[in-house]
Image 1 (spheres, rainbow, N blue to C red):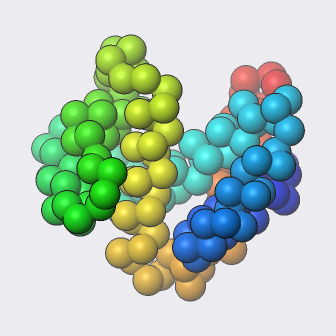
Image 2: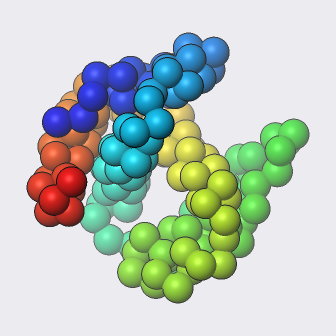
Length: 148
């Protein structure tokens, strides 16, 4: 079971309470960082299932990345579309893409993807507790599978 602060971080982040989200993130002990990122990966998976219905191919990824480029066009920190596409392709089985981008680029891509899906689909925030519960269950399964 994921620690409550992991879910609180996601809640704060998606409700644009960035100071609170940063405070929660900073307070997560260094020993828990890997577990925290595992939970975020589980939540990302839930969001991708929400968006794509369980499976998506390269063309779906490219369309999604083009949407992201448009959505974030006025962001003072522009997205790296290659990193977003590479990250999505890597988690979709083309693992060689993990080696092409830094961990920082991968984490940023993860947050941008989660934000895009959650903000553009009002059902996500309305049912956030359900999505967090699903991520929690998936996280617990990953922890069991990995033996950590």
